[in-house]
Every structure is written in structure tokens, then in C-alpha cells.
Amino acid sequence: MMDTLSQYKTHAHTSAVSAARPMQSYWAEIVEIQPEAPGVGTYWLKFLDSTLQSSYRFAPGQFNMLGVPGLGESAISISSSPDAPERVGHTIRFVGNVTHAISRMKVGDVVGVRGPFGTAWPINKLKGQDLVLAAGGIGLPPLRSALYSIMNHRQDYGRVVVLYGARTPQDLQFTREYKEWEKAGVELMVTVDRADDSWKGLVGVVPILFYQQRVNPAKTSILTCGPEIMIRFVIFEALARRIPAERIYVSMERNMKCGLGLCGHCQLGPFFVCKDGPVFSFDQIQPYFNVEDL
Image 1 (cartoon, rainbow, N blue to C red):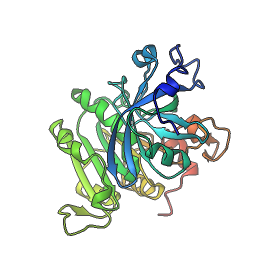
Image 2 (cartoon, one colour):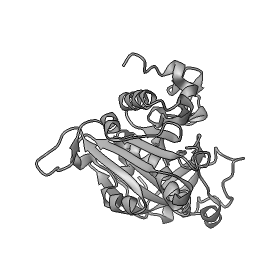
Image 3 (cartoon, one colour):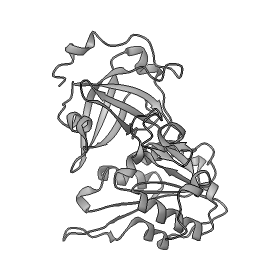
Image 4 (tube, rainbow, N blue to C red):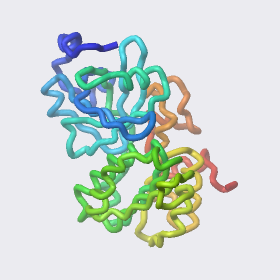
């Protein structure tokens, strides 16, 4: 385990990352840790290379490979704003050897970072449209990156609606930020699968929130990420409201493994999610992601 920053500073690379060197790994220091929910935390990273700190760029929806020496790497979506790339946030669910090792780290420890990889949410293409961001569970972090970019350019978009759900109130992420989102003109609806006595909000799954929304299919786009079954029902509800398949965008980031398209774990029809995705328009993957039988 990485106990001290000084142990690794001598290994910091001196050249900036670029698209020409996507396979190069760089050391980054953990500068802040924010618990989000049981088994989930956001780790804010800052590259040791000062040149890289100023040159690193990513687009919302992309991911990095985070590495721990001796254990390997894990594909983690970037959850922070692309407008503030000097610190890169990754919201991590602790489910494997690499992520459990990261969960035991503290501020000042370092991890390897390789990336960014993958396709992005097409938020520039969607300017002038109404946007519905539908997320379930750990599917919110990849959308958070897009949300902050949209909020920073709020005048470029119409209605912005976030539909978010988690299993329990305790599993909701980024709760400290909800008021900030609403102040920025974001319409937020939050639901949980199972409520407790303290919960005063909605109970149910994310797709049923569409029944409380009126959308204009001529000018609305959907961005969705979460459990696959939730994504399927979100797509079903969007299609039922005559939103065209080419304006329904899906992140399949939960399927990513190696980040290279080599292991085949993330194959979806002819696509490799980590290489050709993780963000797809539904018309791209419709033949391989059936929602007609729901």
C-alpha cells in the first residue's frame, strides 16, 4: 500500500499527457476524500507533474483507469466538472480489489491515472434543447460531470431536469449539492426504492418520474446512466413520449473493465464499450439493447 507521498514523488513523470500517449500512467495525489454513501466515496486527485496539472483535459462522460501497484487498474468515470480540470474527481463504489484498496487510502497517498478514455456526452451538440438527465445509483457520477458543465453554461440550454433514484435515502449521492443545482435552474426530482421513517420524498423507481414530467419531444434529449434495467425502462418511457432514438444518450460505463477493448468483457454487439463508448446514442445500440419486450 502507498503509505507516503515521498515514496512515489521520484517516479512522477515530467512530460504532459496528450492524446498521442493515452497509455501512459501518471501519479496523482489524493487531495480530498468526500464520503457519498455507504461504500461510495469521491476522491479528488491532483497530478504530481505540475505541467500535467495545467494541461490535463477531459470531456464529461469520459473515464480514467485508476491503478494501485500490485493490484491492477479499475475503470472509473470522472465525476467532476471539465471546466475545473486542475483537480479531477472520481466517485468510486468499493466493489473489487483495486477500489477496496483505494478505500483504505488517505489524503496524501497516490494512485496511478491513465486516460482519459471514451466518448463523451454530446452537450455542445445539445445546446438550445431541453435536457432530461436520468440516473440511478452509481450512474449519477458520470452525469454529474455533464451537469456541472451545463450549469456553467446554463444560458445555452432550455429546461434541465434531473431524475435521480437510489435504493434507500442513505444511498443518495451528492445530497449536499442539490440546493446548488436548483439555484442554477435545474429541476430536480429524487426518489428511493425503499423509504424509512425519515424520508419525506418520493418512493419508486426512476422511470416512473417521467409520469410527472411534460416533455416536448421536438426539443428534448435524454441522458441516462445507471443499472441496465433502469436504462431500459428510461428508454422505453422516452420512446413512448416520441423522443427519437438519436436523441436518447446512454452511458454503459458499468460494463467497462480493461479500458482497451481487449478483454471482451464490455462487448455489446460489434462495439466495445470502453473503446467505442461508454456514451452511445440509442440508435447506435438499439439492435443490441432490446427494450421492445418490456
